Image (cartoon, rainbow, N blue to C red; front, side, top):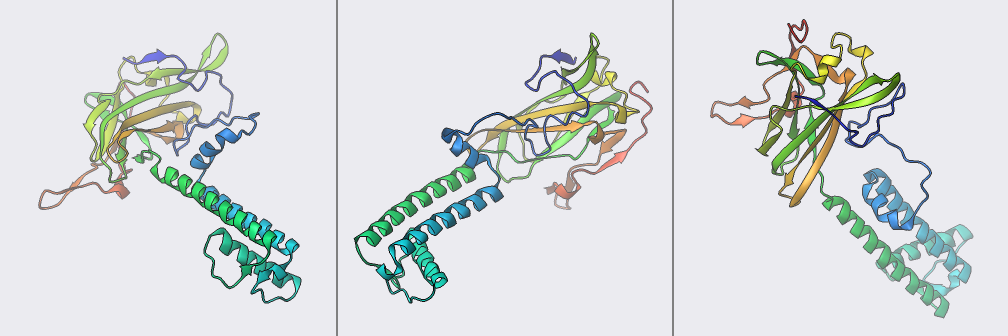
Length: 312
């Protein structure tokens, strides 16, 4: 029996045109403002930012540091860089930049050599800076690659499908990595717009599943919520979903043997992603030798069926 639950953490306030609570990439759709920057949060920001931003930021930091040191060498005087071919100002800046980058990366081709106490001191400081910067970037790269995560493919749609003698809401998931997931469990709830004492609010219900936990997850898992007399789907007009406002909230977790720890995944379906009167096609295919296959490119395929209502 579905039961109303307390706010799971998203709030009960409702406003028109509210966006979904959980994005399709599993992130929560909440933007926090008014928070100042704190150097203690730098690691978390660098670990969690996108790969594109991280690589761009890393290259820009390396580039800007070398520009600064190149200008220092120019200010000191390029005459203190033995091997510099000389020339106009732009050429001297280029030569100083190349020398700076070689020193920063500790490559040291030897074409240009620093002369004088000040120039050698700057070169020493730059090489030490380079070692620390690359150590930090290498550590961040390892942290990003080794960060425990779960990559599940959710069916594009949730369905209201025939089930036993009635109907059920169902969707399916599969692991798109080759890692072994075990001890899987799922929690599914639904957020529905409701009017309580004249005030519109979000009301949450837990959706009982026919199978909420499995020991092994080698292929596809179809999660089924049978729609009985107590199901919150009876509060929804399934014939006019465009007038409804609800969100099916999903949390799945399990133990990943690659990481050696528990990982989790989040997802949600909104009213426009719910297909009423449909059933999934078989997820598995078999060859003549009995080998089972799971064609992921057909994972979202379903067939329409006649739907006359939950009680039909």
